[in-house]
Length: 225
Figure 1: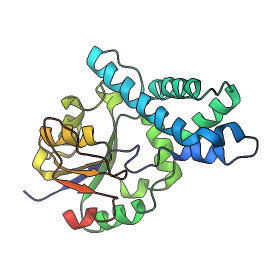
Figure 2: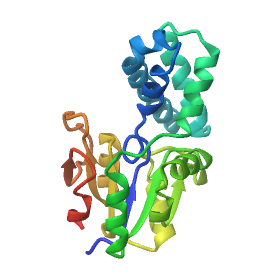
Figure 3: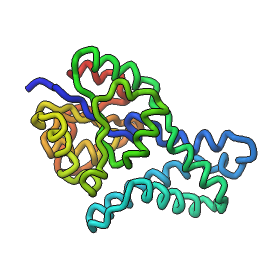
Figure 4: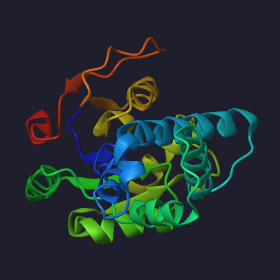
């Protein structure tokens, strides 16, 4: 069936999750962070995801902001950064993540073609609203869907169910786009047509399903619909 709805993961897909550490590292007096910021950014994101998976398995849901803070605390300790002011700065910057440069034009093109566009994210509603407002992409979005509504993190099927409930569409009418291989696999197994945005050139995850398309960025998404 024809695609009617294009759904995007937020963090790492539309918004650059490394931007917070990168920006803070360039500020005056951040020499200690400047030496380690790529590792800190990677550790922060990895633990953020690991904590969300573990909480999904155990049923111990907390808002994504909590796992974001917990992930940062782990990453800072690993990097030897005991700096409460830096912690607050990094967390503040996470509310102002920039969109990747191709995102506005890509979304504008999809909207011009009459497609509905939405975010489906583990992020807390207020976190997502902050990123959407800061990046200016809100005018291209018909919905911002947060797992807060169902109280469990992706890749739980209850999260993907939110798309059909919101748009009244079947799974095969949805193009789902994520930079996370596990998320793209989960969505493919659910029945969405899927795209993995593999910015880092990683191997394909060995999971229950595979995405239909693998791209290096979001530029050519409109060509798939």
